[in-house]
Length: 540
Image (cartoon, rainbow, N blue to C red):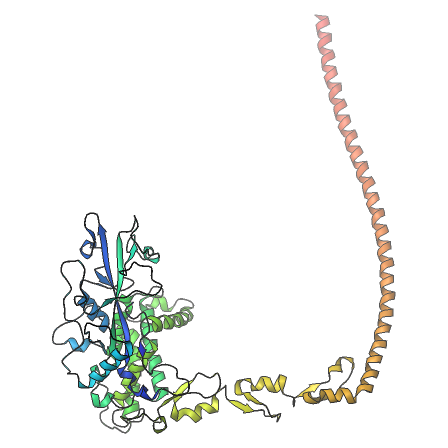
C-alpha cells in the first residue's frame, strides 16, 4: 500500500524521559515512503512488457492490492502523494497536495537523516510556486525505465522479499490468491510479474499554514492533540465501515482519507469575531465536522442494517479491528498527531491557549507544552509538562506510602492488594484458628503470637486430637456395621439369583416340551395322510 510502513519523524515517538530538544521541528521532519508497483505480462515472442497487460487487468502501475492502477509513473506518483484517485494537474494543483511533497532528487543516494535535514532546511527559503514533484512523463516504449523516467522512484527490495536481483516477483496471474505465493524466477505457469518502486515523501506544513504560524514550537496541549488525533482516526474508520464491513482496499480508503484531510480545513479555521473564546469554539467546530464526516462522505447506513439485531455491537467490534488496520497501513499515529497540531495552530494562532508561541523553545523547562513521559517506573504515559502534577495525582504506577503505616512504598494500582494480602500491619487470623484459636493479630506479629501462646495452642491441638480419636472410634464401629450389612445383602442377592436361574430353566424346559408336542402332532398328521393314500391304493 502507498503508506504500508508507518510515517516516520525525527523526534516523534515515545521518549525515555523527555522529547528530544529538537522535537519542536517534527512537523517539518515527518516522512513516509510512497510505494508503486510496476506490472508486466509475458507473451511468447515478446517477453515481459507493460503493453502486454490485458484490458481487464490492472494498469502498468498500481498499489499493492491493485484496486488503484495508473498508466504512467507520474500519474501514480501524484495520486498516491495526495491520496487522490486521479491526479490533477494545472494551476490548481497545489490545492490537492494535503501536506506531502517528494524529496528533491539530485541523482545520488543521500543518507536518510541528511536528506531529511537538507529538505527541512530548504522549506523556509523555498519558493511557494516550486515543488518537489516529478514532472517527467513515463517512457512510451513500454520497455525499461531510466531513473529519471521513474520520476525519482527507485526499485525497492524488501529484506524478506521473494524476487530476483531486479526486484521482480512472478505469478500465474494478478488474482489476489495467486499473488500470495510469489516466485523469484519465471515458472512455466507464471505469466505476470511486478516489482516495488519507492520514493520518500516529506511533510510540508507550509502547504497548510503560513510560515509565521507553523514555524513556532510544535508542542501543543497534549489533551487536545490526543482528542483530535483520536477523532480523526475514528472518523476515517467509521467511514470505511460504512463502505464495507469486511474487505478494505486502497481504492476505498485513499479517497476517504483525502476528503477527511480536506474536512479539517487547515488554514481556514482562523478565529473571527470575539478572539477571547474563539479557540475553543473553532476546535469544537472541527470536532463537529469530524463527527459528521462518515455520514457526509459515505451516507447513513440503510434502515435495514440499523434494525438488525446486534448491529451496534458488531459495529463496535469492527471499529476496534479497523482502528488497528487503518493506523498501521493508512493513517499513522505520527501523521494524525501532526495534522492535529496544525489544526491547533490554525485555530489558536492569536491567543496561544493550546500551543507554544516561542520560535526557540529548545530548553524544555521554558515550555509548558513540552512532551514528557511519566517518571514513574513502567508508566508509558506521555503528556504536556503543564499536566505533570495532574497526572501524578492519578498515575497508577506512582509509589505511595502504605496507609496502614508499614513503611512500604507501593504502586497506587497495587495498594488495595497490598493492604489486603501483603501488609504486615493488616489484621490476620491465627494460623491455628482451625483448631479453635480465636485470636486476631497483625500479620507481622503472628510469629510472636505463636511463640507466646504455645502452651494454649498445645492444649487446643491436644483437645482437637482427642476429639478426632473419638470420632475415629465411632467411624470404625460404623464401618464394621456397614460391612456386616453388606455381607448379608450379598448373600440375599446370591440366593435370589439362584432362584431366578431355576425359574429360567423351568421356563426353558416347558418351551422345549411345547416344541416337541408340535413336532409330534405334525408327524401324526403326516402319518395319517400317508396311511390314507396307501388305503386308497389298496382299494383300487
